[in-house]
Image 1 (cartoon, rainbow, N blue to C red):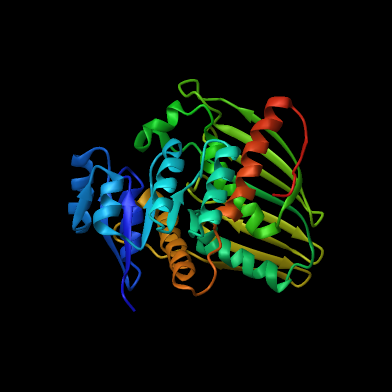
Image 2: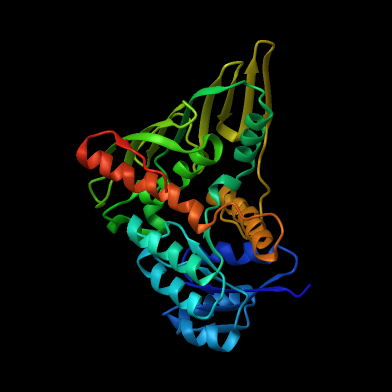
Length: 342
């Protein structure tokens, strides 16, 4: 089988990890990068041995004709770049969040659907090894029927130091981390029927909210609460770990610090660590996340190659964005919202 030829639009912070994650997969190569800042494109290309670099994305598509485009730019640019890939009938992977509003995201998905061009979202969070283990335990029915869960992502990690643009976002933690956490809620527990959200801005040097609390009633009857914060100082801070507590009719599952998964039933508690692999190119502060990028890419390659269906399609991710933007609306109105099926 010929190698899968990937081209990357955007050579900022995350490209330095998404490109080597592609290179971890046999039969996959990065053939070109593009950035408006050609010096930045050259630096990333030289670092990872990418042969071609461009300032103009259309020129890249014309000259290289890649098998897939990986869009790793700011959300405001996503629609134009997806439309460009569609004009050339090239499958496209888009960084999260797909767009800055639900209407734009819906238009992007419809455009790709109408054109018959595969469209995926790079939603890697659900591919963390400990979260996949929790999903496996749930699917096995080991704790019976779940009735309540809590998902926590809270720390004081200085995220603005390596991504200073986050300070200027009008919508911050829900659009940045909330896209991940609410996608995890859907991955583990299905779709939501109702949603309530409250937000806070604790850090006075930023524009958007840095704390959010989301309470959802799921279609299966569960109650799921999600807490997100970059303003918390806690005894157990393990950025970027996500903590879980899931209660069921026959027991509970806890995803605790340092990747410990504990399953408790009437016979007692069984505990086991599920750390992710650590790659040489990963930032130690983000090693858990960077390992999940490899697994996300592996799943997307399967979808592109006609193997196992990719999980994080544009159409699927619309349901996550519906929760994200619904959470903002709930906080603005101080009301509980009913989630309409997409």
